[in-house]
Length: 495
Image (cartoon, helix red, strand yellow):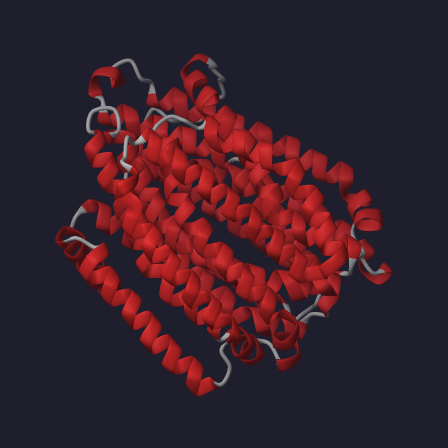
């Protein structure tokens, strides 16, 4: 099996196993915590996820720089890998400290004014914010060290700690609940896990780059290109996550923290499907960063391979989610929850499918050294999104938040895909099959929204998914793709 396929398998395991643990733990955590306390916990997790994405631009810049200079030895002669990584990690650490300081300064405003925190939970929430501020630097620096391992194609080593760390993080509230319902011990255990991961990542990075040591010197010259590359990505990493997580803050402000639980629980569950494009795009990004300058045709092949595999992997899951959203939520949480949240779940599932395909285009653009594109688009979209989000939530509540979220993702997808086609020098005819298939999928999604009855839904899924997968296998995938996918499935089953 190729190195790329092995990397994809390890990335999938690193994403899917923690997501599976979260899926199992969530209903038990909800039953153990009050809706208000669980809503606060989800808000804390959203802040942590936002911070992780905040440093993502710089991390991608670091990964791209390391991968490119491994692929071009002539340039790599003057490339000081140790100084580049050391300077990058120190920059990430300083940025994370600034964010932690901002969180500490805003904790009272968040607790007492912005969020509808019940009076009896306000003191506990402030304590949780303080521990979260200590977790943030660990999360950001860990992301940088993972980027180093990814650049060296060490996906197995990275995920050997990512898998247990992610699983334990998902189970942390469940482990604490038998002793206390307080959020503070839960966040404290997460801090310990992040410190353990930091030690492991640092050790593995040292093995790959012996020149990386504890020399506390900061040299700007070696990371200038990364700062330039990561500048626009950092803007995107600031603005993009705002549009991903702002909805729950607006819901908490305009409605209640209980409503946040009703919205954010299916949101966090449905967006777990992002593990699939994340697992594929990581290895593909590393390869594309090495090949784009001297083998553009190979880069085009990688791009189409990513699109096809994300589509084939996601479409059955998305159709299943949309068709059985009400029944699934009723079994997973309870019937009342399913009744109140299933429409939101259906719309979010559509958005996740579209955004997952867009991520392949986005990573390709970044690998082509055009990191300014996502930043400019997100800056353009942000003011419109904020106004629309407030208006939709004010008038239509949680469903309004889901609708405007999907609308923003559709606009993003169209613009980024057209730009990717242009940068890769592709003919628009190359995506005719994709357009045709998208139309068929849109019709199927419309049917899955209105179809009723368990038997009818099962028949619809068997025919619909079977037809789409048959078309994909015979028409969309080439022989090379089918062989690669078969090897990937075999390796995943074996692992």
